[in-house]
Length: 358
Image (cartoon, rainbow, N blue to C red; front, side, top):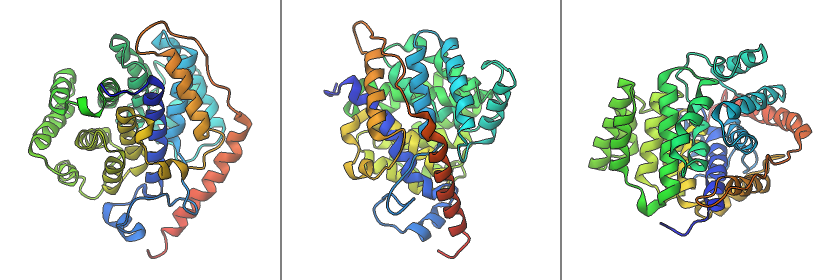
């Protein structure tokens, strides 16, 4: 196993989520061809706001999962209740771009539904985007991982595809965190996935990934097999296979993996966030290109704040030995609403820009 500390691995997953999210956000909803027309074919760089990048709900959810794990690390139901209150408060901060299932589920939480019953019958990728950090933190406690993923998933997405897709992402993150890039065994992992899933559509998708990986097919050809040659949708049966395939093709190359998934088009911020988390967990934070990380201008969840969150999570979830109980990391929550309002204005600006020719 590569010499990577638990803190480096967890920070890699968290900051990999942020970087992939921020790079993909300007291209969200654009087809592969449309994104190429607007942003060119050159090296990927931050293009949201004067050469800088911001995270979206993908990053915020990862941070909330981390905080809920610190608050309730032992019991999946208690973790879900804590995460549910964080989601309620998050909605009050006026976040931009949250999915329909997530919005309706949080409203149901506010109406008094329990986290076990608040989810919507949706197969969107919202549960999958919360899964990587769960896999990384519980990588050395596999007997508990499935319960935590289930609790997180059912809070917003009750469809079996959404839950099992999120579990596959979490298991992939755990695999990368334990083994490092040199130890990733794609065929063995996909064989395990094929045996674990119950949804026939997802099992067929995993079987296809094994076949295409063995032949060395490109990610673009793989996406075309699923009918997504112009862009990967937010449907979990499109998002999860695409993210897993790109990670398995480039488990040790953060830049290449994130560029490849984002250039497929579609729901580029979420696919970028998931692949960024998977490769970040596999290579550690040192594998993230420094200029991509330096180009993010997040606040109040700054890069430094997320590094401190990773440090606490590493103490709470060590690879071996006794766990510390550092508790959640303080956050300047009054800054969330003005940050989100500024973010909304930037996103609206991008929306109006898309009405004009490239």
